[in-house]
Image (cartoon, rainbow, N blue to C red; front, side):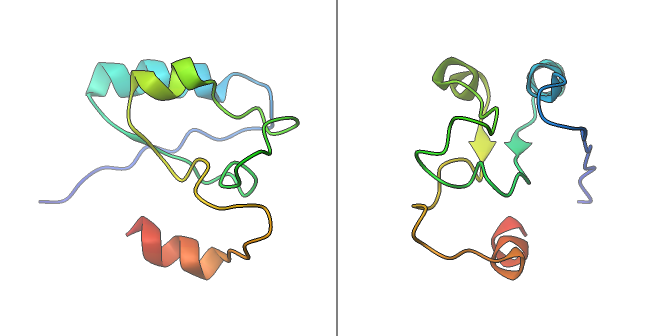
Length: 82
């Protein structure tokens, strides 16, 4: 079965998180983050990372999955996101 993918893109702080939550609830979907900074734990300031309350509303992927001292590449992301 082929799944459709919807991309919500834009600069930091324009409301992508709220839009994505609304869309995910409406479509009973999950959110896959492609933000290169939100994958790191403890980097909440300056990344506009979703709050704990927002993360609890719908399933999220690739948020807080690595420590800042762990290297992580676009290639790794591509493999894990499949």
